[in-house]
Length: 94
Image 1: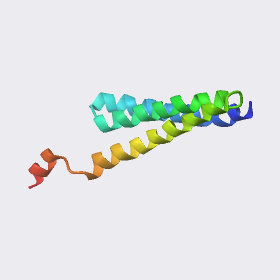
Image 2 (image 1 turned 30 degrees about the horizontal axis):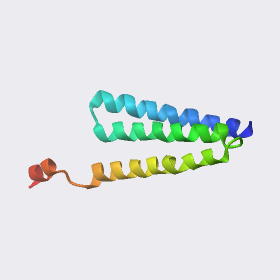
Image 3 (image 1 turned 90 degrees about the vertical axis):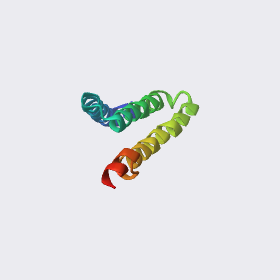
Image 4 (image 1 turned 180 degrees about the vertical axis):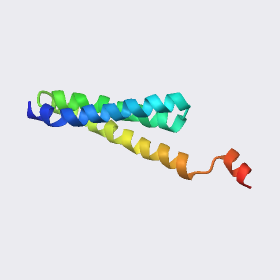
């Protein structure tokens, strides 16, 4: 029960942030941040079963691997959207 109590505030805050990111990204048609919000939701979808069921079935802990990959995906999406020049932007700046 303590693992649930310990992670409940983090889960509520993280899903709240994901909701806010998705709401604003969908409103402004910001594709990279739609991906970011979706990947945060995916991350928590992998994390919640671990918290709830890892004591009964330890192999559920393997869901932490796709959870981590979701965060790697966030880093890749943001890197590509912020630092890799898009062809249209590069042509406009040239």
